[in-house]
Image (cartoon, rainbow, N blue to C red; front, side, top):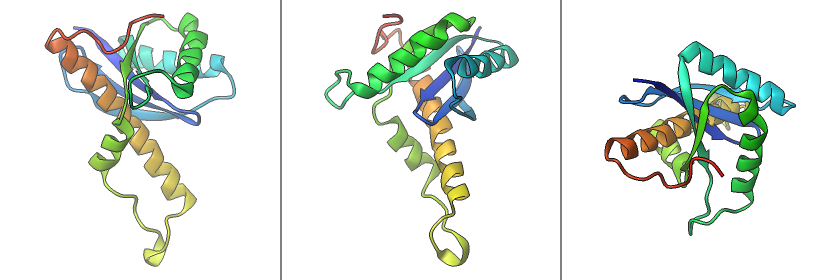
Length: 158
């Protein structure tokens, strides 16, 4: 049994989830994107080491019709930049609608003081929670596909 990390890579944050290869994915943390790929890779490698994970499942943001658009290209470029610095295999998983599903799971953002609009801190915390929940959904999709011997939605390597 091996451990896996699931990543929901965004422009500002990286949601992270963890699971055993035969278990249930759980949200782990949200990383703020660093100023360099090297720093992002170092943070992810620390998590790989801490969690004893040997494989990473990265959400690939395909467009509604299933083709790759600008966001998918940005995700692939990021993976291509950090992969050589990581001691783990990397596989992609279609992540369409995972953020929407994550928002439904965690519920609406809390209101601010006296029922007013949420503060910036509250908004940032909610978004970080959505990102790590989305990573858990991505990772659980991969685990479910493996359990039923379903071919992954996207290829392991480009």
